[in-house]
Length: 245
Image 1 (tube, helix red, strand yellow):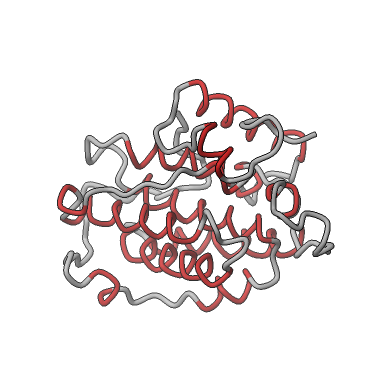
Image 2: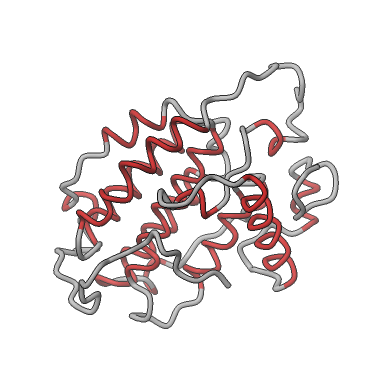
């Protein structure tokens, strides 16, 4: 199971002190951030970079509440989401029962998972859904993290890095007409350490991370990972849960 990366850093803030307004009936009405910089930068990224950014923002919400609840699902979804950055069909369809996820801890976690499910699986084809997910995940993270400036200190150089190194790929619309090899046409693979602005980008390390996550999620039968039967229904070609050569 994944652990908190060093780039999710809350400084000396006490995460047990929630310090934000939460009403399950209002949710987005109480968000006060501005996601325009995120969306503007995302327009200059590859589809895969947008997916990775959405997962990264989800990470900020997940780790903000680490140790404050007893649910396994948020981290299991995180693992499956990283798998989906290799091929979005790897993320299985899920729905968390809303009545079991209420209040200022479980409520934000439910919202984050719902936003991710909305944007990640089909965001390569329906860009609006992925942009919606990025916007909501950013606004949610900005709302709940104990020190929003820590999020911004990470976000700004990360956006510049993703824009600078992962531009939209030049694609042949007829190369994979029936979308059997979706994962191969989203742009360069991006690993978790690439989201750490203090580290140099290392494609080998990125592939090793993604290969490990795929293997571990498959071996543990992560409930949010699509089964082989589902992948067949989604017209997946080749050996699943491995990095394409």
